Image (cartoon, rainbow, N blue to C red):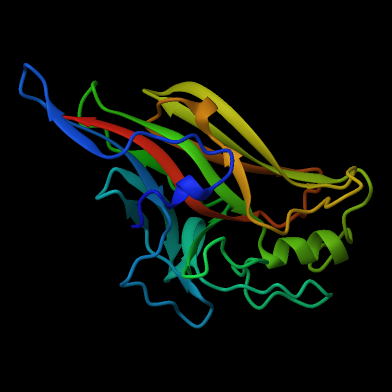
Length: 246
């Protein structure tokens, strides 16, 4: 994982650099920013530019992104993808997991795709907190649409009801929990056809997750005015502030 590249992202609060100390109780304390960029050196993409496993770990297991896998394919939840198709003229997506724009940084080749289905893992994003003194707080992430989503919204590709009309919308909602109690909620618009400019997201946009606070679990939800809408979205550089004590 590459640490602190998130500092280059607009609207991300600068966090404390990695530090370690001991207090009078001789506890080890670590305060650091964890940037999940999904650039794992051992990933081998399949022909559809996707890597699917039941659990994707970050920060030596502090954060886990989970999925349901059926016969080696993503049934619901997260996968790592590497396909990019910036051609937004009317044509079918190369795969369901291609995004529409290259990553913010030239040396990167991977990102996360979330697929919402009826077959979801029990917990989508879960954190490991060793004790009550530990905390993990989401700070920000980058969001973009899949090529398949954009083609569906613009041209009606794959949608029974045709393309989005003037009042249609789609959004992703992030909800934080700690000990089963809701800590906060953040919503980001993936498409809003009431807007005159750029009604459909086609670039990597920064979303502030700080309102979620300290969490041990995050849930995601894709909603739309259209029941037949594609329920996939792309993420990259998911940033957490970690306070680990033991």
